[in-house]
Image 1 (cartoon, rainbow, N blue to C red):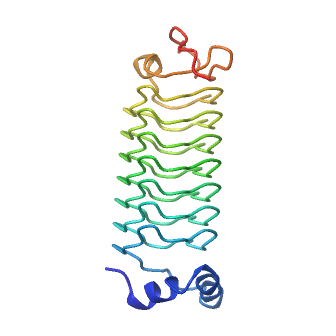
Image 2 (image 1 turned 135 degrees about the vertical axis):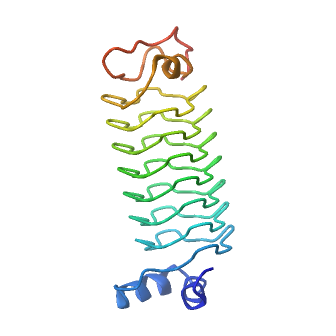
Length: 203
C-alpha cells in the first residue's frame, strides 16, 4: 500500500513533487497500489519509485524519469510514456496495452511477461531489454532499437518492425520472425542466420 505522505505530495502536482524529491534524495517513493488513473505526471521524477501494482491507466508520463523504478504488475493501459526514461526499470507483468512509448528509453529494462499489445514503441530504445514472454502482438516497433534484447518466447505476431534493429537479439527464432509485419523497402535488421518472410508491405 502506498505511503500516504508520498501520495499526498504527488497529488499536489509535478513541480511540488520534483522539488520534494530534490529535498529528500535518500527517500525511495512508495506508491505501491496507488490509484493514479489519468494522472498528469509529465516530467515527474519517479527515479527508483515503487509503483508495483499501481493503476496508471491513461496517465500522462511523457518525459517522466522512471529510471530503476518498480512497475511490476502495474496497469499502464493507454498511458503516454513519450520520451520517458525507463532505463533499468522493472516492468515484469505490466499491462501496457495501447500505451505510447514513442522514443522511450527502455535500455536494460525487465519487461518479461508484460502485455504490450498495440503499444507504440516507435523509435524506442530497447537495447539489452529483457522481453522474454512479453506480448508484442500488433505492437508498433518502427525504428526501434533491439540490439542484444532478450526475445525468448516473445509474441511478435503482426508486430510492425519497419527499419527496426534486431542485430544480435537473443533467442529470436525463425517462427517469431515469420509472424512479423514490415515494409519491404525498409526491412528490419535481423540476427545472423534468420531470414525475412514474404513482405507484408507495411508502411
